[in-house]
Length: 326
Ligand code: SAM
Ligand code: SF4
Image (cartoon, rainbow, N blue to C red; front, side, top):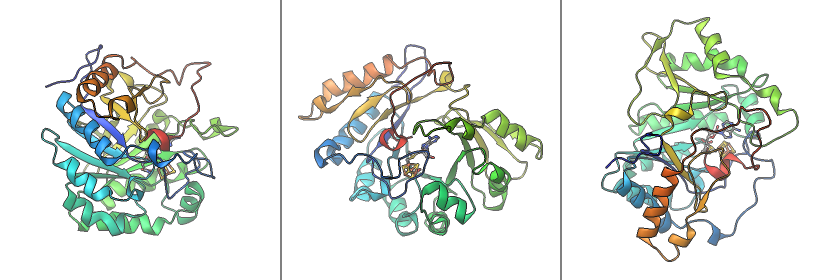
């Protein structure tokens, strides 16, 4: 079955957040004091998350990415992933992590049936990494990448948020990773969600990132897979890993968007930057499969055509990526 929105976009991808807590405090994602801790009952139980996943797959979702906050900090995550992997019709189960706990958990994640890992890593310099994450240990993340490959995962995809004056001098180091280590690297435009003063100074467009890379390397265009997100993908001839540019802010994105999102508190969203969201709790407590199915269908049908974050005067309610799942 295919799930199609009112503009004919095939919606086959659900990003499911299992927690808004995190063991890091990346400055672009969360305030340093963390985010308001919700009570236990506000966060969906694994049974509720499973019901959402099963219902979405029944409607035509083929790929689920587990995200957060940091998904690996939630107790019981491995057993949950194993149950998700068993859902009939789910073709692709992936997880996005900051990698801090990966060294200890990679083998269990592989056994549970996770197929791909994305790891967010914004610097290859331990000090810069510490500053961006407010204390994170780069060595642990690199050990996590090694453990993932040892456990049998393909080299994890690396997500890098590029910020001017913070880590843009490392663009070529990340490019080199695609041939040195074989990881695919995706450069993400910095999005102003935690609005600290003067946030504009960090913004650097995907086009500029691409121009800088193309000024030094020959790039081949890469054909994307069926579930790939809306990145533009390239490869240095001969490199095992590819390079992706995600221009979420500056555009080229919405017409190919194939995803919906559900937060760890049960808010479903058709667009990351829309204030439009639907509370799924009434269909989970008690479980109402039919109501849930209809509601998820509506979210797809009413999915906005595009976000307006690059429009003049655009405003949205403040949120943190950790609450919505990036
Ligand atoms: N904790 C996990 C991690 O860091 O990969 C998963 C959740 S995190 C919210 C998901 C993705 O959102 C990460 O790749 C992160 O870099 C990205 N992200 C968070 N805040 C962002 C921002 N302001 N601009 C661009 N990307 C952001
Ligand atoms: Fe945590 Fe990921 Fe947000 Fe960093 S980007 S604070 S690791 S949720």
